[in-house]
Image (cartoon, rainbow, N blue to C red; front, side, top):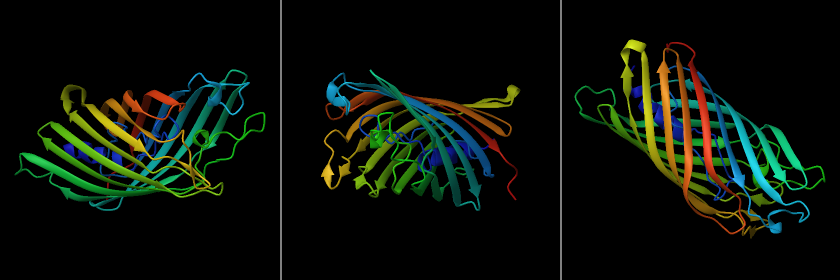
Length: 311
């Protein structure tokens, strides 16, 4: 199995990831997913991500003081199809299905359904990973993506109070992202660097989510188990995420925005047409407004199936 599989997989993990955590303290984009395997053929992937946000124990954390918000739990299932039309371009379409649960002292509210569908494209600008004449090899990529406002964003609890924007399944607005990705590799050891910028338009409620920036550095190692026809790819990294304040009717929401630093751990296994992965993120530092909900850990699993040989 070519190492190019893993390096380009790192590319798309960064450039076309659809997992977003805009309501978990600091508005983190949460785009670390480990390595998404790309075999150079069309493929289908399924991913599950989960995290929880803990609210401060204070009446002002809830719109109704008689029912204080304690925790928010987010579970997202994501279905992705990737199309390879050349050696330079990769296209992607992802459909997220979310289950969001809010636990309060007086009630528990759950909403579920489709989120914001995302489309993306990535172009490989430099790729020397297949060169037999180079000891140190490089990949440089650029990617663009757009999220469509397909998810519900005005759902209410049993008291008919509209749930907060960050708890909704969708944004009600278009979101655009731009990213750069660079990989440096020598033999089986490599380093991947990713930077991503995300921009939001204003929705019909005159609410605009703050633009976000995320940067990640990941060290990975390829471990071949030839007797089992299995390849393992452990990864270790660190990430920094920043989100600007949201705006409602042109006025900044003081309890939004901030930044977080994450430690990232992941391992993937490749066998035949199948690839499996698990990833974990631990919050190691936060700088968020007082009263904002905060997430301390994120979890994810994924499976990918190669549909067929490239023609």
